[in-house]
Every structure is written in C-alpha cells, then in structure tokens.
Amino acid sequence: MKINHLVMLFFSCIAAVPVWAQNSVTLYGIVDVAVQAVNHVPTANGRSGTAFSLTSGGAQTSRWGLRVKEALGDGYGVIAVLEDGFDATKGTLNNGGRLWGRSSYVGLTSPYGTLTLGRQVTAIYDFDLAYDPVAPALYSSPAYDAAFVSRADNSAKFLADIGLLGGKLSIDALYSFGYDSVTGAGPVAGDYRVGKEESLFINYQRSVVSVGLLFDQQNGNTIATQDNKVQRFGAATQVDLSPVQFYAAYRFLAQKQAAQNRYSSLYWLGAKYLVTPAFNVSSDLLYQQDRNTGQGNPVLLSAIASYLLSKRTDVYLQAATVLNKKHTNLGVNGFGTSITGEVQTGAMIGLRTKF
Image 1: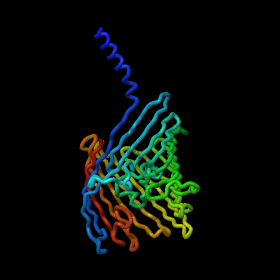
Image 2: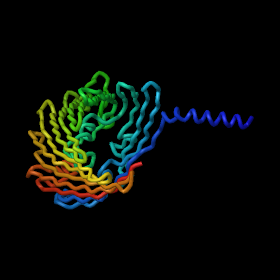
Image 3: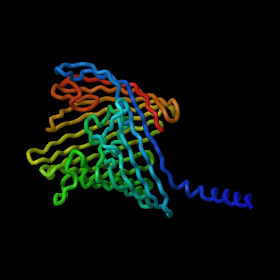
Image 4: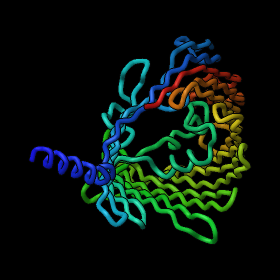
C-alpha cells in the first residue's frame, strides 16, 4: 500500500512539473566596475586636471532585479519587474535614491502585445538602445542627452510586433501621468499637463535593414511650467551585414518655452563588428548642430571592445575623444565635465559580470 502511494505521488509530481515551469521568479543582475582616466577635467580652482577613478557602470549600469512570470493560458500571462540600479564603487542607489529606480512595473502579456504599468523606460531609451551600438556604455549618445537613458514614473506602456510586407513592425508606445514624482510635482488634480509625457517608437525590420522613427513630448514637471514642452524627434537605420552592423541616426530637440524656443540636432554614425563569438568592437561618431541652446557643436568619437572570459563575464576597454569649440564644454561623461574649449580624452578598462 505504501509503495502504491509513493508511485502515485511520484507520477503526480511529474505531471505537475510542466505547470510549474510556466511560472517563475528570476533573480538577475550585473556588476560592472572600471578604472577610468580623463584629462582636462575642471578642478576646484577652475584649472584643468586629469582625474583617475573607479567608476561603476562603464559598459552597463550595475543593477539587480526580480522578474516574475505567470502563465494564464491561451497565450496570456502576467509579468512584473523590480530593478534597482546602484553604484558598485560606493554601494549607493542610483536614480535619485529610488529603491527600484530602474524599473518597477506589472503587466499583462497577450497574443496582441504587452501592456505594463508603473515606472519603466521610455521609447527614447528603446530607440537609443536599438540604434547606438556603443550605448548604454558611458561614452556614447547619453553624454549629449540624458533622455536617452530616461524612465517615466506613473506610466502605461504598450509593446507589440506585427507582421507586415514580409517584415516585422514593432510598436513601442508610452503615456505617463507624471514622469517624475520624486523631484517634480507628479500628477496634480485639475492640472493634468503637469509632468505629462507621450512617447512613441515605431520600428520596421525587413531582411538586413531596420528603420526606426521616434516622437517624445514632455510637459513641464511643476504647475508653473506645465505649459512648457520638450519635444524629441528621431529617425534611424541599421544595416545588418553580419558579422558587421552599420548604424545612422538623427535626433531633433525642441524646447518650447514662453520666453524663447530652443533647438538642436544630433547626428551619429556607428558600427559594430563581431570579430569572434567572444570578441566584439563597437564605435560611434557623434556631432551636435546647435541653434540656440548654448551647448554648441562638439564632436565625440568613441569605441568599446569587449572580450568574454566566460558566458557571464567579460573585460572591456573603452576610449573616447571630444572635440570642443572655444565656447563648448562637452566631456566624455556629459556637458560641464570638460574645460571649455579643450579636447578631452577618456579611457577605461573594466570588468563586468552578469547573473
């Protein structure tokens, strides 16, 4: 009798395994630290110096998170993500001190697409990740525009892929009721424009060619600035001639304010070469054409090379040079991080492991 009960229990467990396998909670993360050297950095007395430091997230932001998946049947499911970004050199939180500052959302998956609600990356982030081969490494397009790594609080996001004309059309749409509720006012009763963000990235891929279009608009994040608008328009293409991929992209920025409208354009060309399955090299050439934002027209040339030590761990070398005009101060880590008018060069060697 006991043997029969054991046999029945055994087969019951075997039958239950496929059901359990459809549901999961995954712990994942990245720890990335590099040694960095950058010249022509402003010192406390306003002079020029070379900075040597450890930096976290040279190639990818250090993070850890939880990913939840639950199957509901018939192609439907539930997903949730909690993701924390941190500085591995100091053990402190990124993203303004938020515990789950990189992602904090729950959503439904279906045969028609995925709808998620919470704090999540914008379409600007997805556009840049798709068309900047060096991003999200530090010496890349986010040095010109921090929105390329932006996230939105209080947001609803819809993702869908549609077969079209022998290719794939991807839709990435986000609406936020208040994109920053920590430093800004967030959603305000009676003033729905405060912190509102609308973000759309449409991508079409057929054979070796991909083309992407971007639109994003943010209203001011306080009651006093809610009528101000910051708009970004983007267009990009990729040609995949494996093992080499080529990229070209454009972003137009319009800051519409009561006092004065400001405009600038950002162009870049990029390439990625998978030398071997373990070794790849990516490069960027970026140029900003500024009309009246005051940032000027600096040029940034960057490259990153990565070599896999294992399936989870790699070492990388990254270098970049910024050509500043006499009135510009773009550094490899963003505006204001270089002495005005100087040619700044930065380099780092880092170790990154994923789990």
